[in-house]
Picture 1 (cartoon, rainbow, N blue to C red):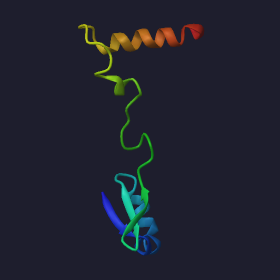
Picture 2 (cartoon, helix red, strand yellow; picture 1 turned 135 degrees about the horizontal axis):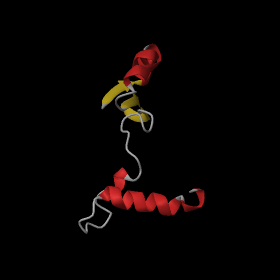
Picture 3 (tube, one colour; picture 1 turned 180 degrees about the vertical axis):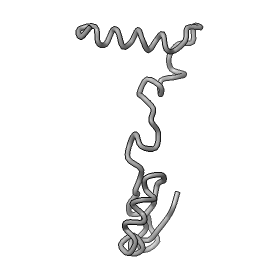
Picture 4 (cartoon, rainbow, N blue to C red; picture 1 turned 90 degrees about the horizontal axis):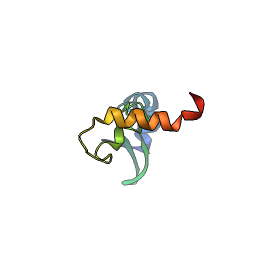
Length: 80
């Protein structure tokens, strides 16, 4: 996390936009946080919603890929 002043942001906007691709930048004014620049969703981490469910899916010995396949078949049954 990087912390900068609003004045510094105004003077170096291009630099901080480039840095914001990879990390959060907290912007302060008079010593207080006023805003945060953050990487676009999906840019920092390319995880699917399913991948975030690891640990929530019951652990009965089957690989999670099998759960994923069953879920996708059920969800898109009308399109198959």
